[in-house]
Length: 271
Ligand code: G1P
Image (cartoon, rainbow, N blue to C red; front, side, top):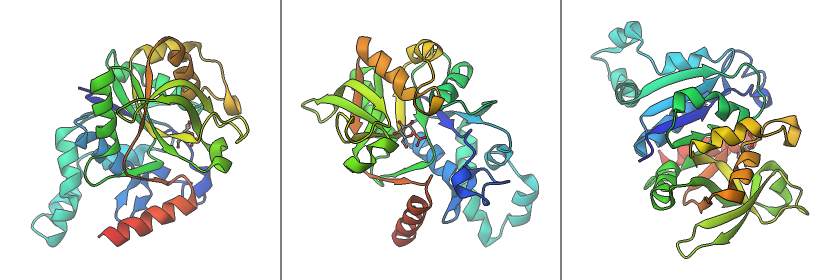
């Protein structure tokens, strides 16, 4: 069972300025719920209750969100508004939250490495909250967790992306298995359409084994001069099994205005 989940929330969110000047991008709401709460709910649904956050300067609102606010709670007690906080209160009751800061944003791989102490020597999930993944029947982390239970190795979520957009994703080269998963031969971070070995793009949901930390320590800066998780997984795929899961569900890129609006419209239409 994977019990731990690392949520990477260290990025600046420059694509949403000026909104993200003083507000962490992960706190921007889709309807009435901040993006990061969707991530935690997805983790809890998958049975992951030890939640680690990689944060940075200006991200304190995330800690406040997952903490009691007695003054507010007293004020709304017994009013119609009380129910609005109930789902968040439940998360606060059942999860343990840990926070660690990424002093410099040196890449997704570096962010994961910052979580080494709080994840310890256990398999753990990684979530990039910008990718909002929705499946009302079984969330994407729960789907990955099932794949992990079978293969006991790193698992990445993938979906088909337009060939013209491979340079926005980690792209896998893999061999499809009878159960619909892929045994990964290679992962390339943001290749051009000409270089891309497929159009299966990695979405921001992973399950990693603790061996990834040793690999990350030795991973040199790659695409954009940053330490890429994709590169570390590629190294691991040479010696260990890495499996890709073409998950069922919808995924919105809430790191872009278009994706954020699409996600908002979708959630509004589902109310
Ligand atoms: C990150 C990963 C990339 C992955 C993407 C999914 O990139 O590095 O491999 O495909 O998330 O959203 P980013 O979007 O943070 O640049």
